Length: 225
Image 1 (cartoon, helix red, strand yellow):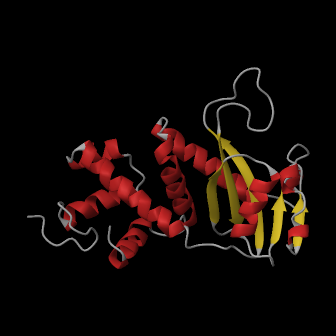
Image 2 (cartoon, helix red, strand yellow; image 1 turned 30 degrees about the vertical axis):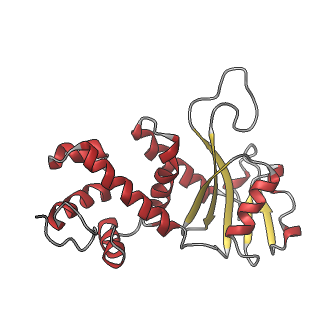
Image 3 (cartoon, one colour; image 1 turned 180 degrees about the vertical axis):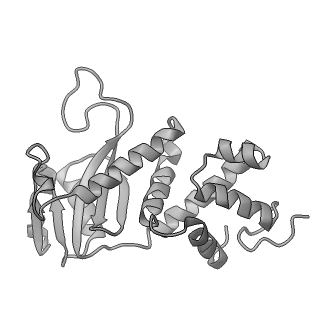
């Protein structure tokens, strides 16, 4: 018998073994690496990691709306651009919208396109109207003040304006860099699970100053898998 596991309801794995897996997860080891290190099956490890990602996705939804000094941007994840196809996000890419509270936390979500209606709906749903919103000059961000936001500051990537003065979105750019560097190690993933990997990346970024293993233990102690 596995015994009582405070972090995993009806678990067929002991608490000690589960904590071992949780340490590997906190260290950002893949399921394959973890299975090899712990001697557990890859299938069983994958199932637990999937449950953990679902839990983190739930936690991520608790951190909005954002308020204060915010940066909004969109980025494109996936294969290289298709030759002969041009334009914003050309090629078979997944579009991610991001909203970052400066020097603090980020919110990231998959969106179907980078149109004005889509981007403004995301900002309106995740940011309080008292916020200062910083973006680039993409037309999808036109009209935010008309929606009721206090201020909308804009810069231009091409002219390197984000590196000068207060009108920059360098913070959200650092998240895009972190996310793309982290996700590439999975060597591609199913579209059905990409959302969970994205939310895990968001959670890790937001907890970057904390001991992630202890954070996970605290979450699961209050609300077990």
